[in-house]
Length: 102
Image 1 (cartoon, one colour):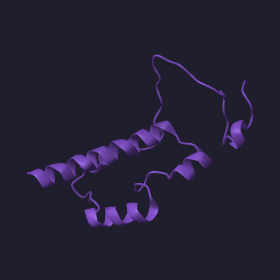
Image 2 (cartoon, rainbow, N blue to C red):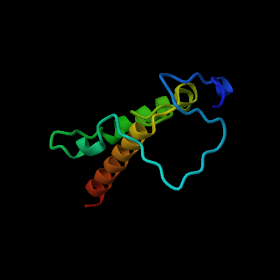
Image 3 (cartoon, rainbow, N blue to C red):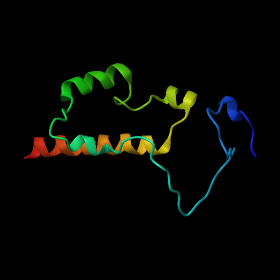
Image 4 (cartoon, rainbow, N blue to C red):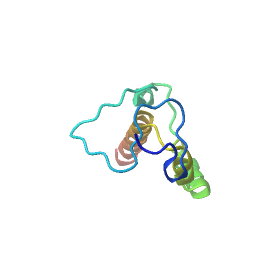
């Protein structure tokens, strides 16, 4: 089903479904293959100083640990891992907000 290399992207690994086009679903479950973002609640977890974060973003034009648009265009994303990364970013933002607002 689908094309082996749609739009120049080469799929990696073994796949059982390749859709070139739109998928509509009322529900989707993604099995997580990496760690969930609870590690940001560990007592020894260190937040990156805001100055370092700002410098990283200015230099790299994307958040740390999140792929750039070029990387996503080249490699795609793994939904479970990306959701975990975005959740970690959200939790870090909450920590910073709490720390700066009291």
